[in-house]
Amino acid sequence: MADDARDPEQIKKLQRELEEAQDTLRAIRQGEVDALVVEGPHGAQLFTLKTAEQPYRMLVEQMQEGALTLTSVGDVLYCNRRFAELVGLAPETIVGGPIGPLVAEADRPFLAAALRTGRGKYEGHVLAVDGRAVPALFSVGTFVADGVESLCLVVTDLVELIRTRAARAEAEAASQAKDQFLAMLGHELRNPLGAITSAIAVLGQSTPEHDRRAREVIAHQTEHLSRLVADLLDVTRGTLGKIELVRTAIDVAAAVQRCLATLDSTHTLAQHVVSIDAEPVWIEADSARIEQIVMNLLSNAVKFTPRGGAITVSVRRERDEAVLRVADDGVGISPELLPFVFDLFVQGERNLGPRAGGLGVGLSLVHRLVELHGGRVEAASPGPGQGSVFTVRFPALTDTPPAPGPSVEPPAGTPHKRVLVVEDSAANREMMRILLESAGHEVHVTGDGVSGVELAVQLEPDVVMIDIRLPGIDGYQVARQIRAKLRDRTRLVVLSGYGQPEDKQRAFDAGFDEHLLKPVDPARLLSVLDAARGRTPR
Image (spheres, helix red, strand yellow):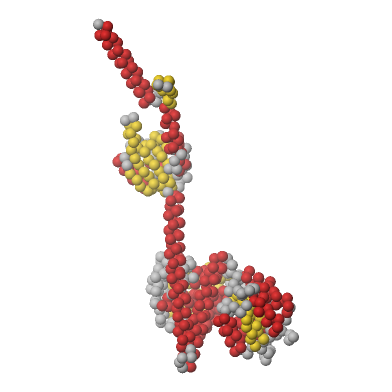
């Protein structure tokens, strides 16, 4: 009987314990319990429910992405600090409100669809409180807690990713432009070198007329190579801000006439109809750079105008500006290319056969040189096949400069000079010797710096031409040693591939009287010797 009597008591005890457990579980679910004390083999242990949740909450708060908990209709139940930073609001002002106003209007239908289905991912924009639209990736998912279904929205800021994409695209475009430039450079170098090689093979092998024509080809192609290298160097100097201008009063119309005469002498304009309408307009500018601008614009017009096409050049004064226009009826410029026509290495699809080559540096150089003169240049074209117009504007001088006085010619019959050439390149040394001897000078040559100093002291030449890169001691040291021994009795001329202002100053500091940039123009070389003729004989 006792066992039967205890059974109901045990049952009641178990029922009470079960009810207590159910009440505890309900209190836990409703957030009424902060901690539990559990008796175990090791005694009583304290478990804090908020402490168990804390690591996950901290993880969400430290995320680099915005995180929100939403209802199915888009009301915000929770948001982390990162999302609040994205929109520029405090978290407490976001919780309890709808998510819609914080999303760009165009993106709201996509978010609503994702919330209805409980999943989705798309790129859109978050609206910040200051009106900025921040590009972001929206990811929607579903989770269930305590039998209640909620939606989770993760918002990833795409600003840095978009910048990275843009930087990568820019780097890829630059790499492609570099590859195209190197390919064009190879083409532009091979063409004149091929013509020079063929002309050299013709010399002495055919008629005098063929020899004369071969020499013309060599001269023309060499000039082309020199211009090519000069443009490349000038573009680099312009990019680095190292172009120096020697300003004087310049008549733009006269500069245009000189450039046309030069092109006409090389038959460059023979296959085009060229007209000029120029009135004298004076500006303060670097004469060589102005002619460089005009030559590049004219060469560009010739390059992209088919045979028989028209090229028109005009110079006018418009209010306080000197305006140069070069127009053609050639292949024109597409609207897509027009905004970038002055960018470095840019060329459009404007092929007209072999003549339409080039490195894409001419117009970029024009733009830089015009800006250095305080002017501006514009390109216009109705479109492909409809020609183009390049307009250059310079600040004009108010008064016309006075005419220069009569020039004084140097006295005739001045004796030729004793010249020493110190050059390590055997080919350059030999050609220099032939050129100077053909002009009637007494020429001595050597290939290194030490022997150059010894010969200079022994011969006491009128002029010593010295290369910079020499075996043994360099050209600067050669100049110093010769100047120390011969004082001012010898004129020193540097032959250099370095043409920056600091390079010239370094040469003058070493004792040089003249700085000639390679490749040396023969006419310029001989004029330097002529200038040396006026010295008092020893």
